[in-house]
Image 1: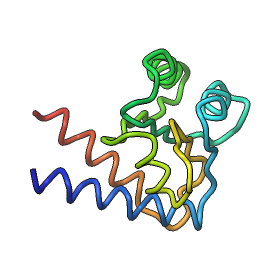
Image 2: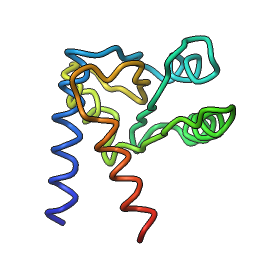
Image 3: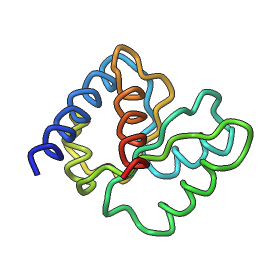
Length: 119
């Protein structure tokens, strides 16, 4: 169980760095628009564990489409915790990372995906 909490704290730290130094679109509608190509540069979408199932599925489907496959990551906690991790006083169901800024979130999440695939 300690490994999971360390990973979550790493993700939270990188989210805070990214919010302060990068470009992020907050909200499910914004993330879906970005993935559909209305915003150039969508890289990673993060959604909370309690994000509605229809939105999760839509994000995953859109993320698989096209030449560039986008990373869709499920944050292991609820939308209120995701909002707090981003330094916001409100809940966030999903967000789209356009530019990670000084954070290493893309490296961290890609490592997380590779370790899950090996299991």
